[in-house]
Image (cartoon, rainbow, N blue to C red; front, side, top):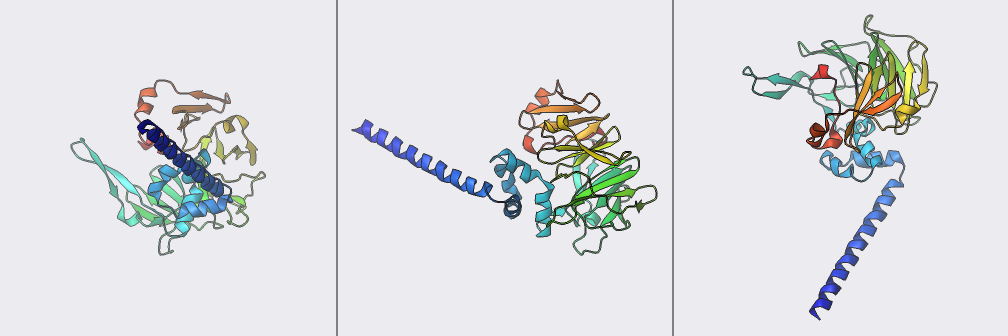
Length: 304
């Protein structure tokens, strides 16, 4: 009888576990059936400390947790503030620490950031008192802020990069129509170029993964597709080979794109000239030691 009772207890416990899993599955199915804007609104109200757990639900949730759209939505509700730090090394060279820059501690998300020499150009970030213009520069030597001519139009979910002295800023014109626009800032003349707004001739969608520059062209992507913009031809095209990998948090070195594939746990590379993907060899032990790999990103060595 004791053995029968034990088996009965095991069966009862298994039934409870199956019932709990079934209920959890129903709840997840209900959430995923909601419109994406509603899901983003829900996630924006969840504490950031829970994001690593949420990212384990599915690849789609992992992408949403990492998307600028989510952080932009959090910023509108006052949940997100950009804080800038400088890495300060001690004189003995044995250690270093991050030091908050007080004058720059109240920049709000989510703006587009581009480094040019010792300057950081910020587009779309505003102060808590709303007195800072839509465009400004940060001098990394003096830790001071200088306003620029305001952007021709307010945009959200910005991503930006620079080609030949011109900064290309891409963003959403408004959340209702979700139309993508692009504006161009000339760093030499310190003025916005005409026409004030350029509408891409193809639908970019949620290009939330940032953008990189390779061989004088601008590359960006949404959840499914990668796009390339040629400023000389003023033309947008899709890149099917680049779209075959879900690249994000990428950097470019010598016109080759690198990103960490957290699913396959490898460092991938893409050469636009040969139009092929490859895997960087010899870094397996280093990647094996990486903690919280989903948050990992590749960084150009000039920033280290």
